[in-house]
Length: 414
Image (cartoon, rainbow, N blue to C red; front, top):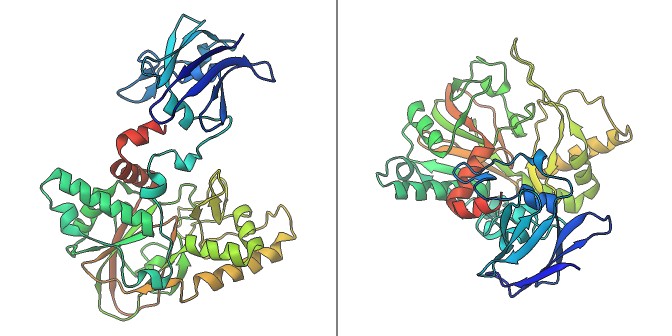
């Protein structure tokens, strides 16, 4: 006989819970939800995810239980609904251990079937963190901007946190943000970067302060025209954010452009679906080898379009300058198709309706999402001094979610 009970959690009317054997004869817990869906949880998985203080250290949010000690055939002795009907408690036949699970948590982490996509597990993420893709006409008269003094000089910790919350959300939503009233010094620019997150050191250094003197053998250290691209396609862990501050320029040119690559990817998918599909599959080798003691290549080459498990675009890696020789084709018939796809892609990202040109100036920083926004620079004359830094994406997203969604929602999702 299956074990069953009824419960009334906080956000639904009732759940029907039963313990039964599945088709493969492995013991599982079945929960019938009020939205007419049924979840199945393996008992060994439930035992492994016990969050009592013996199994999970609440201060560090780390697992204490050694999963290898759980018996393969573990099963409940008893299943009880909580007094408030928001969850259930299972007493196990191994060590007579008791584990409590909230229904909201079980629904959130249901895996057969998955009831909530991974990208929607955080409450409010689909609304608060909704991204706004743009074309030039959508953004040119309302560029996302914040003020340096609000971020740096506020003596009230709550006000400063609110300023960083607003700043991080604008970067996420639009893919870039300008920061006004920045003192024209590398020291103050570095302070600004560190308010958002940690500066990422690379073979270019940590915080950069450079001119077009080719001190590093990279075209960024020249006055050449540089076409639309993302940085770091030669790293396995591509930089998440990039910040620039033009400290000085006594010549002409050097105009920056920004392109919303996610918006352009949507256009490519609609107009040239075969090209879009190729960009999700063909892996692109890349390298950084200008320095005598440097030859950086990713462990595993990645495609231009990186998708999540739901098939949604989460990163664009695009840098024609750093692409290595492509001599490892799964299907050689893809060679001409790939070059056709490049032509389709470049026609879209270079379209004046998609490429926003903007003249950087001393006292105003630009920060952008290197996974989403392309940047370029036109050729220039004269002396030009620039400073800036890379910021890791994972650290930035941590700040973004904690400030905008709240710690509880973030912790519930893990």
